[in-house]
Length: 185
Image (cartoon, rainbow, N blue to C red; front, side, top):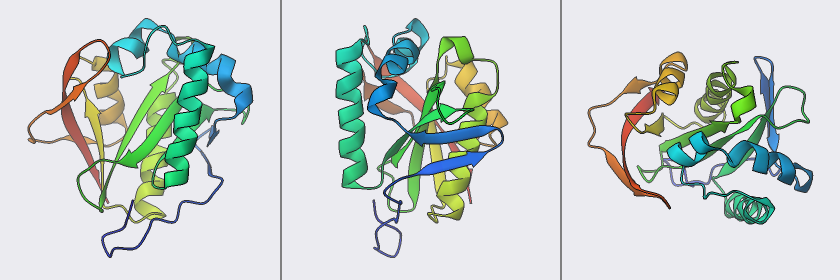
């Protein structure tokens, strides 16, 4: 990913974000069983493009793709933890395709860890990092209009819905028309 002036974003080789009771960190090989617990779940399958069932082989493939994306630059996927160890969910940051001054954030929280404000806090931390450290002007979320929980996260994290046409994405189980929510620096 490049900045508006054509330069590259300087995401450090090892990224950790801390604040508001969270410690966001890179996924490790030791996290593969936790990934299956978090991602092999009906609501995650319904609202994300992750495949189901999400077993250890799927977790290995997912982690490998995450690492490849990280090496290519401009994309990171962080485990959401409260203690720096136990993954409770994930927050992602990547190029939205909307130009060098825009990025997208996505997230998922394991069923056993919902209703604790984890998604809102993780999105807020990553949004602050994108604006403050990376200089990204516009950070977006793409949310299915039926995903009431994610809409609540967007509102709570200070995002506003836009009037932009829906973004159509294909996933394993369906075609979705996602609404864009925006947070400006």
